Image: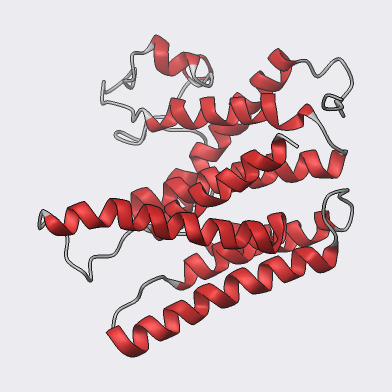
Length: 253
């Protein structure tokens, strides 16, 4: 038996794609402003280079970037390809995540996917995992778990506690015996959120995959002398990728 749609027919794939592109545009605002401690509401959209306000016609998700060939209309500075990529990925998330399950499960998929995307990029670009996303995200994961068909509050809480505790223990042991931070507290809070949304098994999967990816990425760089053993890596990005694998598995169920 195929997946059961949970939205009325009016929410067709094209409509969900457009909604996702719009949400992706806002996610770009979060990525750009939260690490800098700026308001995500005021002022309105502006060029990252010259700070000129972006007109409505130049602020259409994905299409405006393509039309302007990735440049500001005013100063002609390049606009990062990250902007259309985030919008496109969010659009695809909105198209494929609602394919089956009860409404709370679908909402969980959309919220978690959006949060993981923002946090993966902020950690990659700025080495920051904003508490304003991870901690409320963990609380929301717990709230939604109580209404989902695939998860309950106790399992959600166990996932949050297990994931955060394991990563916190790794941090403490690494600091004690190696004198460096293997992971930051932001990573611990991120795994708290991941565990709340996906449960204990997925939290362990995220840690395992992130660690494996870390070895694959850092190993060659160490051998080539591009980084040192104490060079910080965006482990939160790797955790988000690991969680995304578990997330993708949940959408296929």
